[in-house]
Length: 118
Image (cartoon, rainbow, N blue to C red; front, side, top):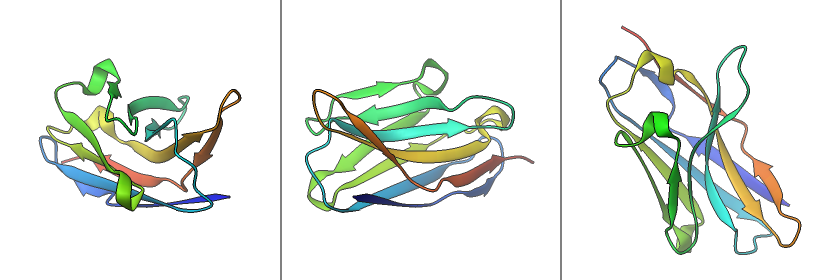
């Protein structure tokens, strides 16, 4: 089993910044990727950003140029630096750990609330 521990959410004003962290523990195999998804009320969970162990990144169009995903493979940790935050970024952010082939499995963190409001 994989456990994911997230931290770093909170309340921030529009234009502000936050940094999320997610540490993976347990029985770990090299993931296909780690990353972040988010879900706001009444909406489906959506991709924010992912990163592979070779540091290939993928971003949602809505966050490109504002968010940066990074990782420390030695610490099994993924980060999300969020700059120029907008009210529409308000959501619960979930850490994701995708592992296994040919049938990948997703593990999820418990979620951390990010609220962008003045």
